[in-house]
Amino acid sequence: MKKLLIILCMLISTMLMAQEEEKREYTKLKVYLDCNFCDMSYLIQEMSYINFARDPKDADVYVIVRTQQTGSGGTSYQLEYTGQNSYEHISNQFSFTTLATNTQDEIRKELKVAIEMGLSTYWIQLGQREYKERQQKEAGEIVEEKPTEEDSKDPWNNWVFQVGASGSMSGQKTSESSRYSFNFSSKQVTDKHKFYLSARHNSNRSEYSFGEFKEVSKTKSTTLDVSEAISISDHWSVGAFANLEMSDFANYDLSLSIKPAIEYSFFPYKVSNQKQLTLSYRVGGLYNDYQILTVFNETTEYLWEHSLNLGASVRQKWGDLSGEVEYKSILDDSSLYSFNFSLHTSIRLFKGFSLNVSGNYEITRNQINLAARSVDINDIILQRNQVQSNYNFYTSVGISYSFGSMFNTVVNPRFGF
Image 1 (cartoon, rainbow, N blue to C red):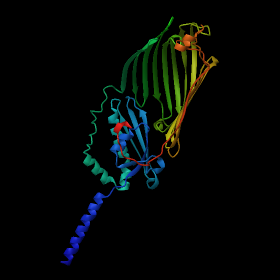
Image 2: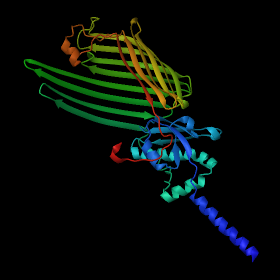
Image 3: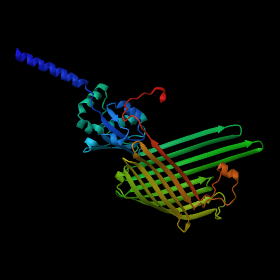
Image 4: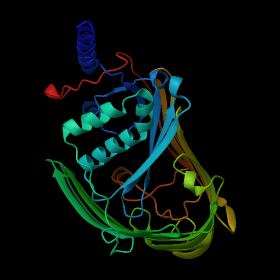
């Protein structure tokens, strides 16, 4: 009888412990997601079993999401996981690709699954694997079957085409304007080569009237760009670039250039989504047929032009940085040249504080297309003709700082704020 009571007490104690375990709140992973294009409201709401940290230092896992465009117009996502604190010995990577036809809802669902897959190692470490599987089962999530080899065949052979048109009209008592444009593009991207063709036509008409003053401005432009790049090795590529342009603003009846090119990547191309440093050189012929006699007393001319370009980009835990320097000049007259400098960076300086800088500055000494006739004030205001300028620039500097609750998994969409 005594043994029976002991056994009965043990059973009751085990049942009570099981109930307490069922009620216990599970420890959540603290994750910092470095992704400035992710739908965070959706992820926070759908992944309530994660604490999204506001600062990287407070996280157990640092997740950075990088993207690159695929040849089909889709996007390749690369997710890199770095464990911190007690998880610093664990690192992981996961990648997936979306199609150009995927909706934003489909993309964010795939991104959610990818984040979960990459965090699985950390969940196992935390002892949450069984809990996560139960959550998925209760939610009724269905795992989609992988496409068969027959389904994955591409009848378009990696070709992607796009056609577009747009138009607009606006006006008031003293002015009216209308614009329309057409565009077409096609591309084929494989591991061995990349081909791209783009064509666009724009037409603008503006009419201004005030009392006896009346002015009508009409401009149109047509451009055609063809590019081809061929992979040689992990660091070398060759290519060719052709451009055709007809523009009232730039004084071109016809401008045509064809330039072979070579590029060297200091880092292997396969890590370009993390860091990239390239040096490229282009050289080729240039033919210009002008609408109006130029300041160099030319109506038609053949020239040789070359350019040297140094570009770099990096995206790491501290932020991202990209920049480019390009020198371009006429081969037989080095006084006709241009320098272009561009920079963009977003740097996380300390907790919640970031510095954002963007800028572009171009020195122009190669405006060989400028019309010889004088340009009046109406031409400048209405931008009917290009005028001489030794430089142009753009710059933007900003800071951002966030503070408040470190973790918050609540989503409340009321009133849209």
